[in-house]
Length: 563
Image (cartoon, rainbow, N blue to C red; front, top):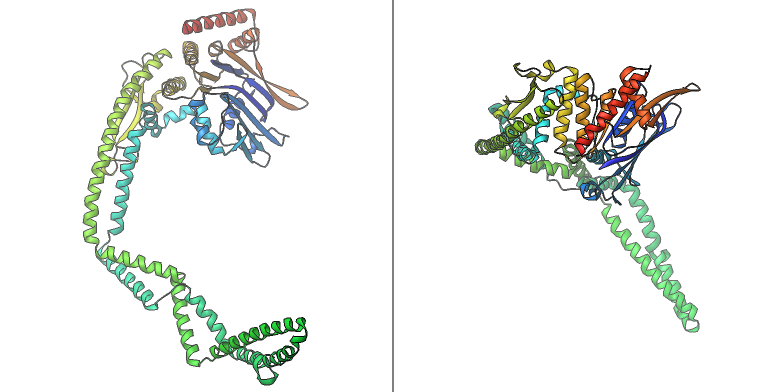
């Protein structure tokens, strides 16, 4: 996997740039402040890093970065997992940021979230920024480095599962562990809740049903009057609607033999009479239901008072019933807590033994991985002009309960000695800036051998390095670039000379605006830039000759690597 093209629009001082990266070592150089790190910022943005509207060029309403990668279909399960097609091994990622801070991401034309893009970006590019050296000083990260190098995820996950089981069991014991007074108070409270809810004899929906009936009873007199008036109008003797319809029906029946129309109307009157009779019957039944006694109304109000008190405390009737079940369960658990605690204690002992066993197995694998890591890092450091350095992974037992933490039974920190005969000490107290950069490069190189990321990016990995050490760093990057694509921002001519593709970052001011341009250098341009890196702004003939010699020497070194 490698990046082929990076298209940048309106990122900081870069209005527009197209950078066509080559296989091997790609180097970016330029004056301080020209915008070299902006290219790295664009790469981090297009691979899912958090972005804000502050990256947008002044005066523009949006910024965009597009990256084109080549990749092996089988090496990227991300596409199958996210149901996105990977055609002909081409990956095109676009990230846009608008002035209101909104960000959109697309992969091969399909919208994805920033989180999805970060997952893909981790498979495509490994970016070593200027802050990574500081991470090396953070001893809490050393164990993570070691586990990544040893590929110990299986053993680590097995321990974590056992550790979680142990912690869950401890939480269960804490839940059942209480002193006698607290236990008595809790039992009394639970029994009170149980008695109160059971005495209420709840059923879901009863309060709503009784509230509707109470409203009906409160308006009984008005309702009774309306019902009686309606009933009399429909069924009240000879003047009622039923009697009048019956009279009309009889008249039509007598004449129906002479007219089919009258016969049809008579049938409709029969239907109407049945309908009116049904309504009259319903009114009669309702009138009977409205005959309430004062005692019945008082009893209903009393019942509603009970229900309101319960629902104010526990929620709906169903919530109260759920609380009743929970209270019964908790009461049974507390009353049986002595036996339960003994059982949980035995189970915890078993969980602790299991977690300790997994931690010990993990520790054995870690120590084996540490031995290999130490040898590999020291070998790398020797190639980086640090032959006298000793690098060591120091193990100490975790001081926590049962000798375990969430990461196992080991605390690990990296130690080093900068000179032969010097006892290893903390990196933060011993390593200079240049040594720290080379240790980080060595670690990155060792750890990258375990991964599948095709492109590695180094932002000023040469900090604090000069002379022979700089030459060794350049050689190490060239060697690394034999098997993968490497992008490097640098100030050193020794590193720039090793480039397979060299870009110069130039800054200019036009009409009061600052512009940054990315220029791919030819051989003559590379001579000029390496001479500038070596001797400064005044480029002399001897500086150009020296630059030419450096390029020739670098090409000879790379040819040996290729052979």
